[in-house]
Length: 344
Image 1 (cartoon, rainbow, N blue to C red):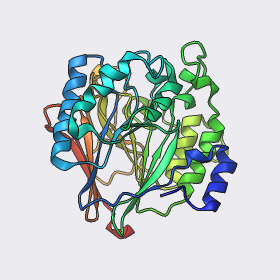
Image 2 (cartoon, rainbow, N blue to C red):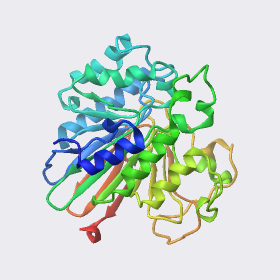
Image 3 (cartoon, rainbow, N blue to C red):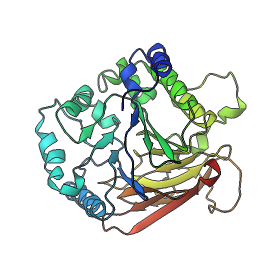
């Protein structure tokens, strides 16, 4: 199916200058139990663990036949890839695609480690591979799951939004050249078009995580105050009532809420190298951890956290959206289910 309506095209052209960023509805009619797999930080800090996670994903895909895969950046540690002909494409991606169950579309985003190399080539490789698909630094599409359920997928490019990267031209040259105001305008335009049952957003870096509780800024109480770029993105996600924001980068599992909105924040584990949760490392102050059904509305709240490696399986069945996080031995780490029957 082509790009959306002419009016939507014109709005995207005006706001972004690149209408190809406004990817259209994917003509995908899924059977009951529509699913997709998500992984992050698959970069081989340890090559065996990289293989173990992808092997577990392959076995899972054999069982459930997901519509596609999503990778949340840092696929190539430490310094990305140098070009579309970098041999790491063969060793770390193409060789893995020999597993038939992995031979599906891999949507993705750039992580900070991709920006340490030739970030543009990670996008350009989409033209060479039948599976690797990153059409732009940020993009969106809609899946019509069935006659009553549709899902908008929105992918953000978070590295250029952070001063750690956009202020370091020597180490992250392409991050310093991105037009971040254009991405935020595009995000506002796409998210304001709320016509789907669910809206799922994806970025490499968390918008909220236990490591920044001490410095959490209650942006909703500061209208008109100058905000950092990530805080501006965060405000857009809350304002437009996104259902889930998925991220990686932290190399551990976290489920958080901000206490002010319906957004569920899920930080997914590294596919290769786990990292201690902040409370375990002793590097941060006291954290507020509450059970999921406590009804506590203080902001923010940490519902679950664990040091782990693995991947996630997301499933839509009947009127529920479920995310389950597994380790490379396919043991369940954590799951969350959201009932969206009231939206139907």
